[in-house]
Length: 247
Image (cartoon, rainbow, N blue to C red; front, side, top):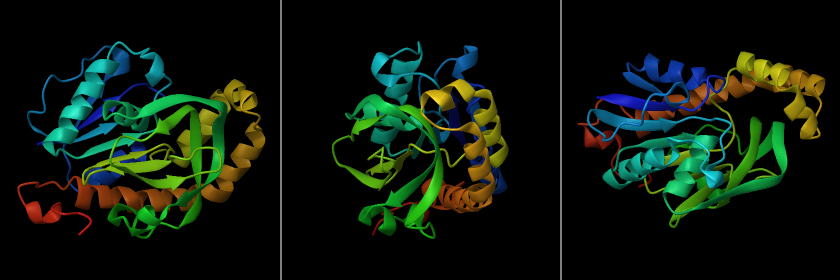
């Protein structure tokens, strides 16, 4: 059994997530959609699905693989296979399960305060996470409406849906907990035009990365350890690890 990791851009790596999963002995299967690989047609030998970030726009359906991926995410959710969406992946999860996405009035780029909701503070995956903490954001679109039955777990001033869950085994996060400090610095340096267009300053963002980056990496490791132990355990044949996650 493997965790399926769907990649949409060579720039949107997920080293903190990948490192955590591998440290628990997880078997990972990468699908590089940006390089022409195809979305799997079924969930055979899959015990978790991760959808990563990317520059595409969900409500414009500007990726040729988008509908196929949304179908897979919907099938995984329906079958009780754990799902985790990150940034673009969060928007894909929302749209796949009946929510809505839209362009933001102003892109959210840089380190922003993200606050857990009451539900987020009680969620086991967010155990040990501060109720309010700086997280790195880089997105032009957002989840305008969460899917039916979803719970909003975190928000920021500009983005009211920074994290949400649907049922027991589907989670999504808009901010980039999966990015290391080095990835944040690279994105800041190479995306100077996007930074400027968002009304931010690259030098300030780099300074903020020095201030907040180590704490962010430590909290991300804690979160992704929880993902590997609680949400996508290596041996899903043991239902006690994942059954009734909130009860």
